[in-house]
Length: 63
Image (cartoon, rainbow, N blue to C red):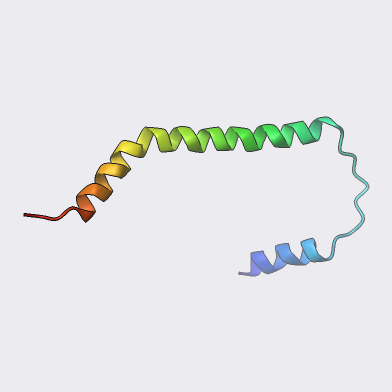
């Protein structure tokens, strides 16, 4: 909880940062977001059958 409050403090009260973000930074951030999306998609694809059969077995009526 302290870490969250500490982080919010620095987000709410920012200081002046003399930093330079070059034009490649935006494409790098976009690349990271796309890679995360593709990774999640492949993970879901790999485990989809197992998750689907789990829920089918969970909600199916037992005779």
